[in-house]
Length: 86
Image (cartoon, rainbow, N blue to C red; front, side, top):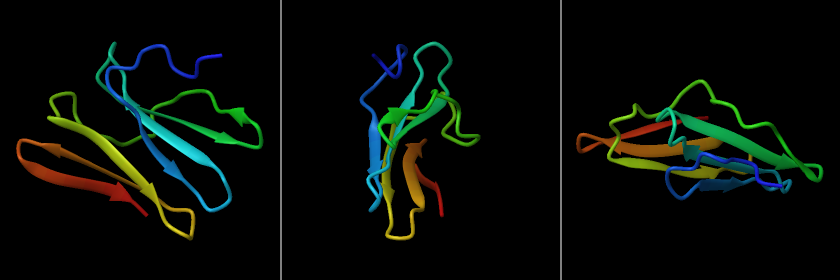
């Protein structure tokens, strides 16, 4: 079963030490960043994470996770690098 139907680009994935997988992508219908996560054998319902690059971003997210379970997402807009996480 697909997690997302409206993928405008390749997803960014962060994998936690406990096996949780967080996936971020740009929605092609709204330009928003979306997130879904896989844990305990099932995927969450895709939803906006409440932050993310504006629709005019030139590069969509790259994601990572640290040993404490924090997500870090990076993207560029207008030649500037942005990061949200922690």
